[in-house]
Image (cartoon, rainbow, N blue to C red):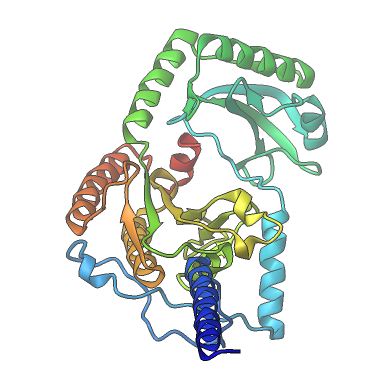
Length: 365
């Protein structure tokens, strides 16, 4: 073999090796970012608190404090107690004249809980509105959802005037009257109904208020260069306190008292990617942070938490924060949104339908 042939062969081999190396580098570069196994380390940041003198983005500089679970006997019993509370049906009174049309039921003699339960309608809805029957317990003199083993000296039946499906209409009110009358006839009582036109008018006014204050906010995080795998997104979100939900592709940031209130924020991405056969090879370029304002207590400083999480994730995941129109969300825009929210909170408080309250959550559901 001549020197020329050897030189050509060597040169060809080098070119081939270069092509293979470049292909491997390109494939690695374009591969979605993967979650990395890490040892459990206690974070050194302080929990987020709402500033007393207003909202400042400069204060959003770290994730909230997290606590690792322990498995001692006391905490185990506490967890069991909490689970029991969560799985025990709620029997507290729910009806309120602010958001319900209520029909009082008078009785000649007390009625047992068993008789009341047997007389109740099969469904707890009237059209698209929640429907409830409460009894005045003879021994405690408190209103509650009827239960076996107790006796009740009076009842009240109610239907919610408005929710996110709209206002109670005349057809729904008529259905409410029929359901209540059937219940009253079965237990031998006397019922008094409010005039239908007045209740429907109240429902429309309440629905108008709710529509004007039903704020649902969202930020989108978009990858700048390299896509993310579902595992990488979940690991990054977990570092900010998010936990998985029952819905694939959705995580939740729990409230400070998760047993009593719903989550503060939601984080979602493509559910099909989360359920893919090999999800770690699935490329994600966008995820959504969401806040359902009327469902979260003002004391949780939910919008401040939302901004904190968005800024932290955008920094750690090499992404940008955008709105639904793909426009970059800048700090001054966050400040303006926060100011508007404070005014909305004030109006809801003045109406006694505060964000995150029992009535507020019912109305905006």
